[in-house]
Structure formats: C-alpha cells, structure tokens
Amino acid sequence: MMTAQELKDLASNYGNLAHALVDHRSTYPLSTDAEREAFDSKVGDLLKTQDDLMNQSLEQASIDVGTSVDALQDATKTAAAAVQGADTLTKALSIAAAAVGLGAAILNPTPGTVVGALDTLVQAIQKATAKPAGAAGSGS
Image 1 (cartoon, helix red, strand yellow):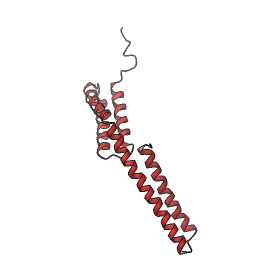
Image 2: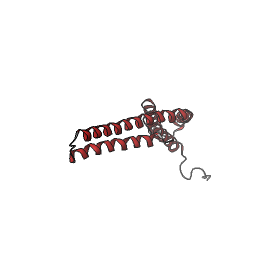
Image 3: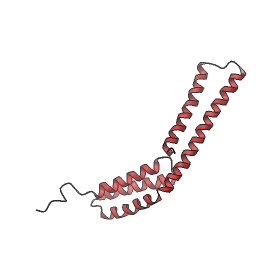
Image 4: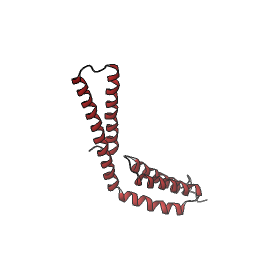
C-alpha cells in the first residue's frame, strides 16, 4: 500500500500531466470535433484520477493517524513531564510550540503533517531533556 504522501505526490503528477496536455493544445490546436472530444475526455480522465488519488491520500492519512493514536498520547504525556522538568523557559516553550503544531496538524490533517508534527515534538522533548555533555561523568 502506498503512503498518504506517495498518493498525494502521485495525484500532483496527474494534475501536472493534465496541465501539460492543456499547454500542448495551445501549441498544437485541435482541428476536428473528434480531436476536441478526445482531448476533453482525456483531460477530464486525468483530473478525475488526480481527484481520486487525492481522496485516497486523505483516507490513508486518516488511517495513518488512527493507527498512531498511542504514539500521539505518549508524546503529549511525555511533553507535559518534559515541560515540568525543563531547566530553561526556552526549552519549555520549544516543547509547547511543538505541541501546538501537533494539535494544529491533528485538527487539520493533510498527508504527512501529523507525522511531521509528532516528530518535531519528539525532537523538542529530546533536546529539552538531553543532559549537557560531560554532566554524566563529572564527579570531582
């Protein structure tokens, strides 16, 4: 099965192909009714395929989000603990900003946005909770 992003990219390619066909028509005008009918039919078919692929992409994104609810729950719980343990306001705000971005992605999902926002939140948590180099072994 293709990922939501792969389906979205493929849909975009079909849209580009339809536009290329329209551009081609301006260079090579259609001279018969049969050519016009075939042209209109193929442009319509390409645009319908683009629409179908985009719909499939959104359905796949919904499935992807649904299967990762546990990861979303874990990340937001970890974020709250990381904010409480952050040693600077900048680190706490970085986590909060990433969490806001994740919330926005969940409320308005598009292929890849939720996964990307979740990754951003995880990275912010990791950065905020990382121990400074040399802190673990200093015992002087």
